[in-house]
Length: 151
Image (cartoon, rainbow, N blue to C red; front, side, top):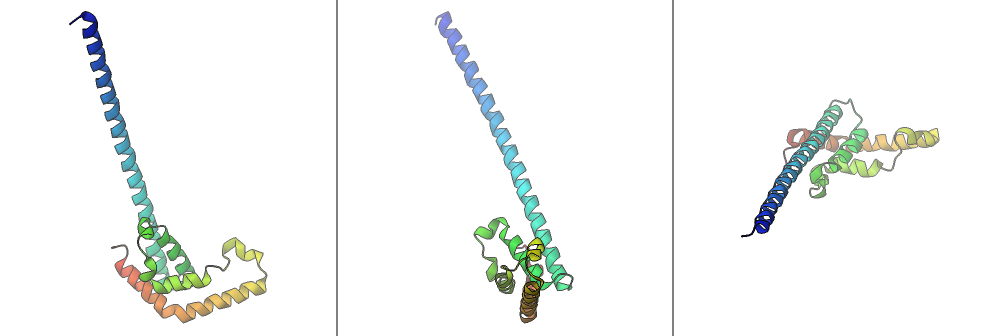
């Protein structure tokens, strides 16, 4: 073998080893980033679950209006990762029924844009739904507190 061939061979080996080291570094970095992402997702889901349970307990103890609790819980359930594959409305139909009945009603700052008479009418309608659905909503809440998030 000539000297040039040996030098080219050594350079080739150095380049290959360098690329291999670089590839391993990138793989480690990717693994670390995936681990961080999974931890962030788990932390987010844990916060969502904690909020759902806190709201449900508040509903059960009359510290949170049933309609407000249903609005919040249904939205939070929709933000859980498996909500695209799992239909929570089958497990908690009364909460979803209440949500569907009142989701069009203004909340927070939007309420201020409506005349007081209209707000009173909407509140009366919402309170009527709360009376009508109270028992089945509380049954859903009890079921949620007993089973959630065990799926």
